[in-house]
Length: 121
Image (tube, rainbow, N blue to C red; front, top):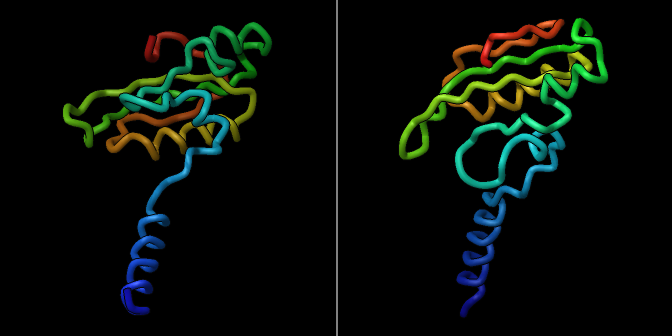
């Protein structure tokens, strides 16, 4: 191999290596988004489950996130709705930001102070 060929191979490997995405280091994403399969958040049973959160924080002091939308890029598009509760508005908005990055079509995305029932349950 000559120097030009080696340089070209190294350049291609550098580009391909840069395209590979490392596993997420986002704690919230690691807790609620499964590593395989469909992009459907799993909030039930985590600290973000509103039933669990309301046992340690008064319901009126929780920030409730409600997100609904669609994933279009899989073989068969599907709807996603999720509800999660947080102790701070910043955490709630971080969840909205995460979900808005995962869903390709957003129908609703909001944080509100106080636990409400019946929105997606």
